[in-house]
Image (cartoon, rainbow, N blue to C red; front, side, top):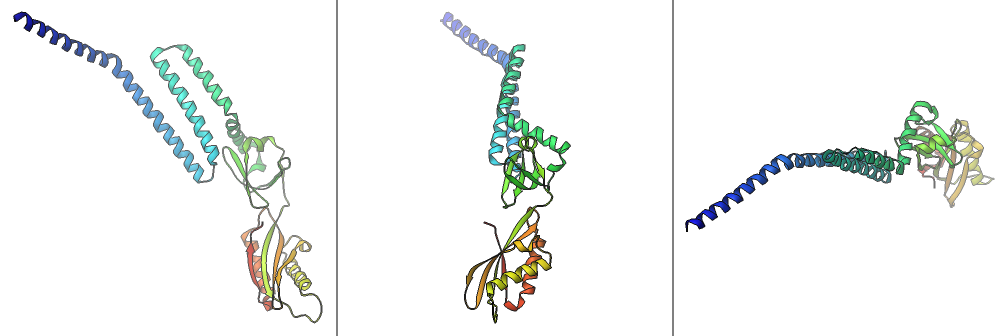
Length: 284
């Protein structure tokens, strides 16, 4: 009986001793590395969340496109994960070869996303040397068939409002490498829908009369660059009212609101006897 009790006591002591040794080993050998791993993962997580939040803000402000935002996030994520994994391996092994592997991996990631790096580099080149690339400058890229006004330059691409009113997104490295012509005499078009009473003429064509008088009004007021290029198209007509579509060439890559208002005000004033109704139409 006594021997059985002694054996049980030794067995309990062995288990207790084993648990104590295991806990001591965990505290001495594993606790610090586990805490380091946890801290590293938290830092990586918070960093990527901050990057994603920044990209979303830039995307909402129309500074970068959704496609570019995804590309940048993927590039940053790959680089972050690669650096983290290699750094952790180096922390636990202290192998110098790991650093060489890290350099090679980063080089591969950067080379596979060379366009992004080229666009960022081109952005600073434009800021430093290219006066013709500043906002509000009228430019033409002959080989790309783009002509219009620069409305903004970001880290990755330049936005150009074309003469048709559309926005063209041109990568910065293309802006730097392509031949660019700075324009000084660019025209755009104001399109109006004008409805007036049919003029009462003893002789002559009412349509020709309206076309002539509209050109005369705009030419005398100097509201168009070339009065002879003002086009007047009849869209509907009856015995009482005539509806016209009038295209007016004006200076600038896009019509200024003040110019549009002046044209409409002048036409309403001069055509007052014909009860004019005028509205601005978007260009097709």
